[in-house]
Image 1 (cartoon, rainbow, N blue to C red):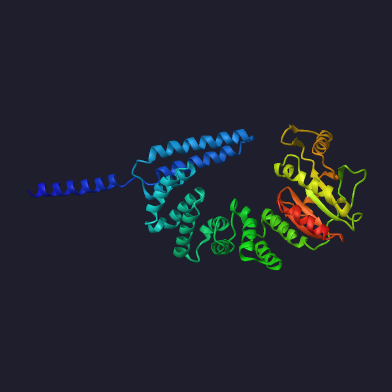
Image 2: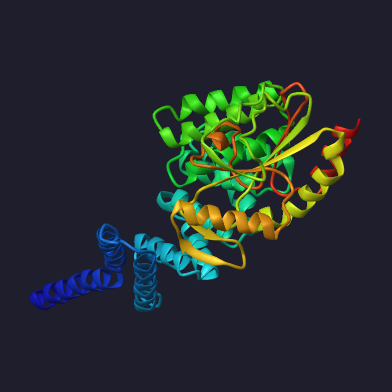
Amino acid sequence: MKKRVIVLILIVFFTGIFSLYCSKPPENVLTKKFENLSKEMTQKLKTIKTREQYNNLLKDRENSLLQLSKEFENKKLSNNDKLTLGKIFVEIKKYDAAAKIFETLMKEPTLKKKAIVGIIEVYLNKRDIKNTSKYLDIAKKEFKDNLKEFAPYFLIGGLNQMSKEKSIEYLEIAFKYRLAPPFSRYVGYGIDAYAKAKGLKKEEKLQLIEKMKTLYAGDPTIIKNLEKKEAILKLIGSPAAEINVEADWINSAVPLTLAKLKGKYVVLEFFAPWCPHCRHSLPHMIELYKKLKSKGLMVIGITSYYGSYSDGEKNVGRVPKEKELELIKEFVKKNNVNFPVMVTKSRTLGDKYGVEGIPCFILISKDGKVLKRYEGAIPTLYGEIERIVTN
């Protein structure tokens, strides 16, 4: 009898252990597969030489992730594997399924931070400002001064806020931390958004840029962008940089210089035939020059050699400089451009004027100082230039 009892106890004990073991899902099975897939992609990326190969690799990854999600979404998973499945759902744009997983994992203390990061990524991808803000606020409350992992999302959240107050609050958090790529490339936009929301004066914005230069010391890409912003701010009211760079001229028998144009208002219009917004702005500037030339306005179009040519109608692809110059001359003639155009052999002039995008317009006073800088085909700029020139 005693032996039977012992045997029964042992059976019950081992049955319990076995059932406990069987009910607990295996750890990190999906996570390991996901990590291996990511390693494979990293290795394959090193062999990529064309855009087509890159796009095919992305498609292969998406298909692999779809297969993984189908294999594991109905299985009993460990919490780490659930987190990985949530990340996979984000990549394959199954945002609602991802949000559901992250919401559940927020109840797990050890995974709470990663779950909140995941759900913020969901709502950023969905461009859902309200819910992005909701979970950024939860992160701020839960982790207070330990927000380094959330800093990139506070930056992007700050750039997308409808409220000035929220934008300022989020960007101030982001500015405390040094961000890694790809988020670091948006720091300049963050500075612009913060300065606008906060109403910073020129000197205050320069101080913020200096602070960011200290934070990102040793990162040449970010420092270069910050220095360009610094140059743009210092541009207004400063003597205009001379335009005597190596270039070919159209509609002018001789190269022009700002020194020779003193006593006139000068607009430098940085453009390119391939740029749709530039093509849209040209007729307005042509009309403005025609109207105000006799009143002391000079317009100079500035483009560069790109090694290829397109203009919305003609797409030639790669061309030598001589052919590109011929095509630009045809473009100028076809569009009835009535002011001088210079085709520069480098982008140094654009760098001097802080050109970040085209079209870009620099208005120079009669005494050779930069009065205004406009980036983009802003409809009001032509009227503003006319008022300045005629008053």
